[in-house]
Length: 111
Image (cartoon, rainbow, N blue to C red; front, side, top):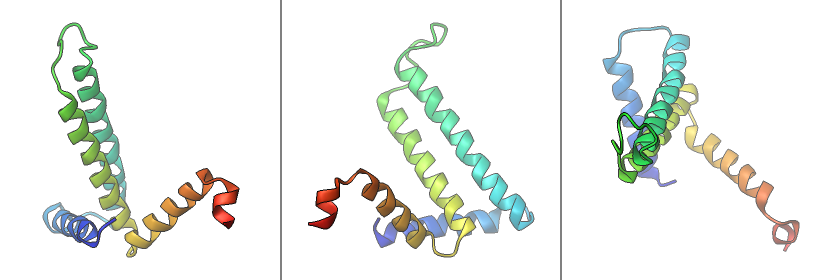
């Protein structure tokens, strides 16, 4: 992930820290993690709307809406990670590497 992505995530986290009501650190983290669930719900709503899965509402969303909401989930998750650790870039990169290593064939790892 590019450095400016993490700079932007840090700016959002700092803005949230500055603008939200004073809560304890545990509450702040809890609320940031719960926000991921809220954003996921918005993805599900957009997906139902794009598929016109609710006959009462019809096609209420587009695939662009689904993509936008997925980005919101990603950003919200990265903000929560940046709230939990002072080195979110390092933690994210290490975890991403582990996940890719799981799917990389053994021959490609050694050669």
